[in-house]
Length: 234
Image (tube, rainbow, N blue to C red; front, side, top):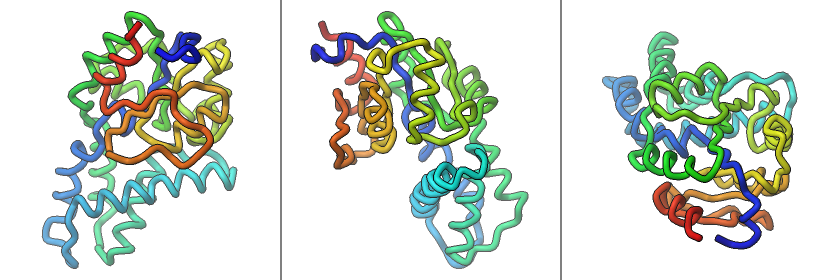
């Protein structure tokens, strides 16, 4: 491990998209939503549009500072926007069923073993854009892992990568930011954490380069197994 990373005592994990596999988990609900609809749109294409719009909704939510809307609410807004953008009419009830599928998100196959390995050396914390109740639900029912703490951005009042989130987490954990490492598959999360003094690990699940920023991850891993190998390598 690089010398600058040896101060790290706690790993703060992004959950939705890093621990939980959103794309695969939501594929079937989106297929059902689009069945028989005109114009024809592939579920995978809708997912890409939805994911991009969701991030925009969250960034706007933080930038405008009109009050934290919540994770599932921004997900819902983004999905409705994308459906309208594609001229696809869907009832509110059918949209609600897709949003309800977030309760059943499945973790990536490498998550459970790697998290257990890492917990032997580090405190393992969830630091998530997800609503607190949803975070608690998926940690217990879907990931089945005993995180040392579950921190939702709901408590900070902003979505990541707002600096308030990382600073709030550091205060709550009573840690110097340099003792914390943000683990995320999202480049904006890595940049946000590094800008606030965290170390960061970029788990490149989606084959994307790290963001073009001076705030670089200290570790780049292809998956959780690779991450654990790098962090536990003496």
